[in-house]
Amino acid sequence: MSVHATTVLRDAGLRVTKQRVAVITALADAPHSGADAVLTRVRGEVGQVSTQAIYDVLHTLTGRGLVRRIQPAGSSARYELRVGDNHHHLVCRQCGAVADIDCAIETAPCLEAADLDRHAPGFVVDEAEVTFWGVCATCSSTEAQT
Image (tube, rainbow, N blue to C red; front, top):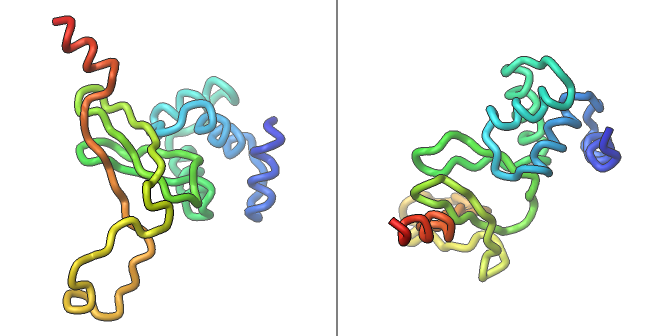
């Protein structure tokens, strides 16, 4: 059992279960995984576990701020352990690979909404999601070879 995952769960006031530890371990090993990929890794570690159990764990961990859920356009939700900082994502249009990229501004939110007071009086923006789209190096080199 991962000592780090156990500590993280206890510090968040959550009960330590094999499934929760396995989900955290799966996301540590493969950031930006979808629920199906997490399920496959968890089953490899703890044996039989239902798909719904994985979704429940991901929902709980996301709700407690231990996991971040992202959903690039046209993609299923993905999950990562990198939370509490101001980072964004690079997404490959061809293979769907996702990579983290630090925000140049460093403070949240990175963007200022134009005319916010006129469109949504009293609304306080605390986060902005930025996704950079393009083609990763692997896909670029494959494309150049064809």
